[in-house]
Amino acid sequence: MIRMLDRAGLALTLALPLFLLHERGIAEALLILLGVLFMARSIALQDWAWLRVGWLRIGLVWWAWLLVCSVPAGIGPAIQAAGLIRFLVLVAALEHWTLRDAAVRMWLARLLRWAALYIALQSLLQFATGRNLYGYPRGADGELTGPYAHPRAGPPLSRLLFPALLPIASRWIGMAGWRPLAGTLLGLAGVAVMILIGQRMPLLLTFLGLFVTALLLPRLRGVVLFSLIAAGLLLAVAPAVSPPAFNRLVTKFSGQMEHFPDSPYGQIAARALAIGSAHPVFGAGFDAFRRLCDDPAYFQGWPKDGGGDGSGGDGGGAAICVQHPHNHYLQAYIESGIPGLLLFSALVVAWLRGVGRGLWRDPDPLRVGLFVAALIQEWPIASTSAFSSMPLSGWFFLMLGLGLAETRAYMTAKSPRKEPSCPIVSSPSLS
Image (cartoon, rainbow, N blue to C red; front, side, top):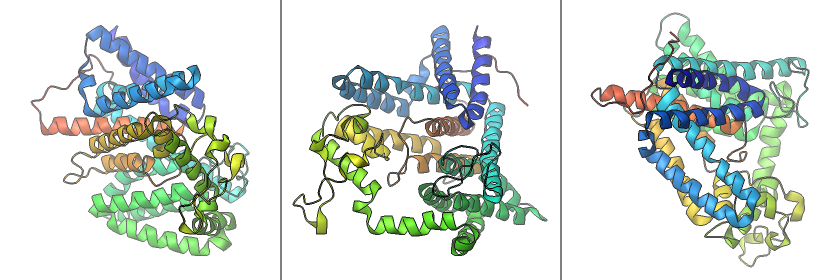
């Protein structure tokens, strides 16, 4: 039985990237099934050592508090909040079970690399011909949609880019001949694709990732500097090369930042703060923003002229309402109050600490890439999709599990006498 569970878990893990690219519904079903199999395996072996991990304990407390906050909102929000446990169990399953084998981790890293290449090539094809491989044109504002019908190529590619490119670029930079130049051009190509896609926040997060890369990987500082200079030059010629990208990345973005309180993002943030301030302890439960956004009681804009007299008008009224507040920390605040926000923030810190252990003194390029992916996903000053929104959340938790598994393998190698928890009884070799 254990052998069958191990083989099924391995197959599900390696299938996830394929279905996260397309068929997000199947990907959701696979990650739930993987969690169920992990629980079944733990019951069969009576092995619950994975429950003692620090990040998981914080995560379970955060989840339980969100569930408590969601029950008063009704059966729907309570069920949705309860379902978030699937992501915590998924990451635990990846860290402690299916990704304990180095060969499996290597294959998953390769699949992530191929996924990034697939999105990038589809974006370049659409840039060159006007349509992607499936016949879809650019987005309504000129964004490149990659392999999708709608503009959603930028967010996953910005996360996949670093674990995909850093190991190759770092290896090539240290070799002789043509490879150092190729490594530099590879980094430039990744940034260039992000610029051409024309989505603002993914590009800004990519620049943040480049800064962290330069901080942790001295070998790649030249590549990062060259990529940033080239990115500036590309933006300078963007009006001729890609007018839609220039309009979204420069013209529209600068206008939104200049008048942020009156922009859609500023109005959404003000509405989220109004809802959260009205429920500071227990929040308003899961999916609170969608449920309460059009309530006139929360129609509140930013004070004008820096005043505190509440003269911000109605903050856009019901016209600004969307499904979520476009920020994970605002989402945690309005759904579970200040305690939930503090617990969620502690969980993010625990995740980053887990993925980043040892990187300062021993910066393995793949681990740095996975740390960067986790950091930009949960960067607090960012606009993003809802915390549990697939497929981006699926990519995040998959890479987070890989990052934690890589850290566990690294720490085990540093302490060879320590027995690993949840040993795999039988794991088919992929080498």
